[in-house]
Length: 161
Image (cartoon, rainbow, N blue to C red; front, side, top):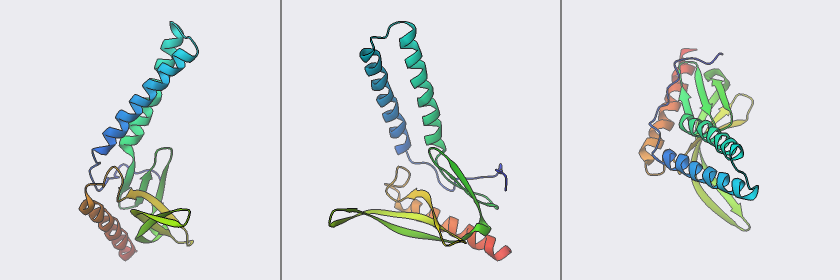
């Protein structure tokens, strides 16, 4: 399956993405300043460092804005920070919520729910949809609605085959 032009993200991105982008700009500005100071750069050296880190910021900000899960009649497109993945509805046997926990020594720390896609081979794929993430942290009903939308699209695709 090729990348279709009809991918839609079934939710509006959260405002937290802009906080991430601003934080990236601040961190890269500090890195630029530290690099210039550390290596006593002047003139062209300063411009090269500034332009290089600005280009990295632009690419990173664009990817942050594009992050997410997109759906179409053909399947699911998961856009991550570094790579994207396309799965057809035929490759997916189920869509489920998963309660995420992290272990810290003897303690288990709950960190909310995520949406997983179950593959035909028995494996699972994380969709990057996280209840506590920048898109859904203060919008739990949107998180549940997106989960239901993906499940419904999967169910309709399975019924049509």
